[in-house]
Length: 384
Image (cartoon, rainbow, N blue to C red):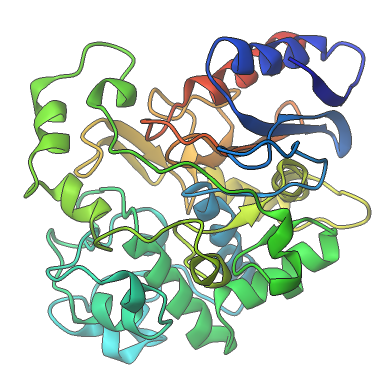
């Protein structure tokens, strides 16, 4: 397998793992970038731009990130808090009065970020057309009753997270999260990273494969428990209702879907753009630092841990970010970031100064710990 790009001395194991992903784990097109203390040490790409095509993946090829988008989007409310514009302990309804309907008066801003709002599903799923309307999603979650007492438990808000976050940002800034990311994050960083792909950049984004329903065995490393199996096979389970908040799920190759801004699921980035973003969360990169040390600590301070009512495995969340654990094994105990269902991964590890971005066009039946991404993480760990 021919792989393009460079690795710094000592990071050769990452190249070897990246090649094995194509040879043994079926990657069709992918890229990985790693920064250490603001310096790029890995920049690799290979395969084809489209999962079913023949055009080669180029250095500037971008891909949809699925839920790795959540980690990028989470930076917006945390930066608004850092600037004194958003109180994490205020009720959401303080900024969004319509939201308090049906027992949601005590949902706090931090509950949106730590998956404790009790709103992982919708009684009536949205159609793909409704989901792309920036008004329909927020209206639906504002009208939805919580499925547990907000703040008392946690469960992954697979799709509703995006509408909750986007409307909060809009109420505070007058802009959607995608517009804010373009102006305040991607622009200053020079990062190829979009939530709402501009028409001028559409040709850079490769076509991805269809996302298949996850197999319970891919969520856990060991043999799945019966409850996990049932969660992913019972159409009425909270798991399936959370992932089915848009039914049917939109075609991810549809230009209209890619041009929209769904902060839970449809961000598009190059591997370098994603890695640059995380590098700037934990240190200065080309004169830009996004998070102060205090905000970085907020992002990775445990807010939710234990059995996840949606994923039905133990998960750990800070404010908007998954934390190192069995469901999301990053580089070390202090790492924070977010995987994307089917493959993508972005994270930062302040202790080692590492930031990693991995994107792929070959989505697999994985929810959190994709074997290709984890092979790269192990290689980085071994190189340190």
